[in-house]
Image (tube, rainbow, N blue to C red; front, top):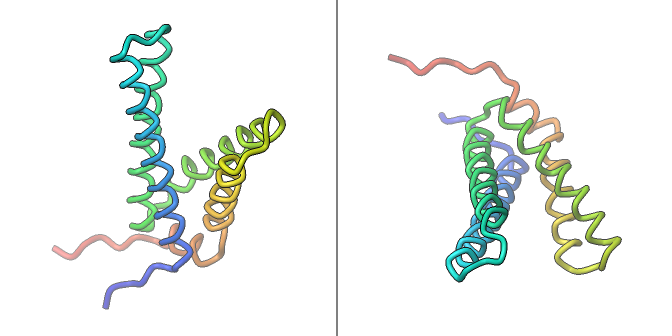
Length: 131
């Protein structure tokens, strides 16, 4: 019988994939801006590539978390902390529903990663597949 993953882990993985999709969408917007003749093509291209890279890491981490791999918690939690820091800056500049949404998602993912059932699944010894 296959081992069931905790619901909290599934929620975390889903939200991380949503974050990755948002980053990929933002990267696409930068590429469109670049194609239309961005004023600063160098930084715009860098941002597009950087966002695609972060999105790729988040997708790989979400897959690894769903598979119960320990390494994936670090990049996901680090990204959530960076999002919280950025959202606090957004709130100080101009409070918005988007900033509140970012805070909410980052907190749900961060707390979800630290819940005992999620930690147990991601730290359990892995059994090698049968030949």
